[in-house]
Amino acid sequence: MIDKPFTVNEALRYARHDFLNQLQLIKMNIDLARLEDAKAAIDHYTAEVKEIYALSKLKMPLTCEWLQTANWRFPGFQVKVTSEIATNDQTALDSQVYDVLERATVLLHSKLDPFTEQELHIHIVCMSSGLKITFEANGEWEPLAHEFTHSAQITLNHECRTTKNWRFHIEESKEG
Image 1: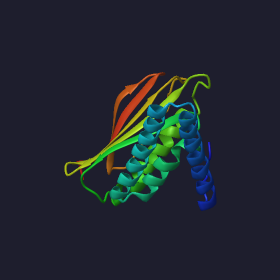
Image 2: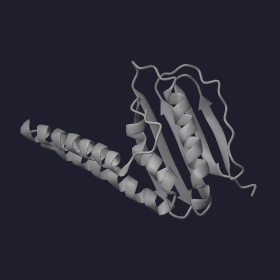
Image 3: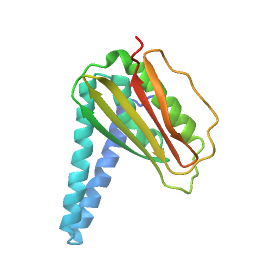
Image 4: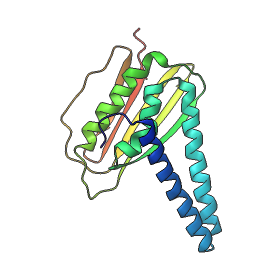
């Protein structure tokens, strides 16, 4: 896990490395005459890039940077980001959302079973009714006893918290 922010050079190095891995997978599938698999890989990577571009509409630079670098910073997880963004400019919530995502993931990452595949899915819904981010981790880890506080601008609603699944929602507080 990387505890400090990436430099531009480091981020570009990781991005180039991932890009080359993706190209190698596509090339391998073409070499093996598995054209449908190659097309599926292209579609998969195209969808991932579109998700990242969609996040920029939120105007949450800290959170967007966190989402884009989570796979590199937390190698114990396969991180997937999905979104439904109809409205924008959640700037006021940026640092609070970033803080919750960071603290929850650092806590969980420290407890992971290294022999189990771990998935972290972040789903963002931003509509005129407000912002809702679902944090869902699946895998296996030691029990989590730690609770953390959050700001008055957001609420945390826990749906499930076991040693195999942790799902909660970060929502814009309606209490002002």
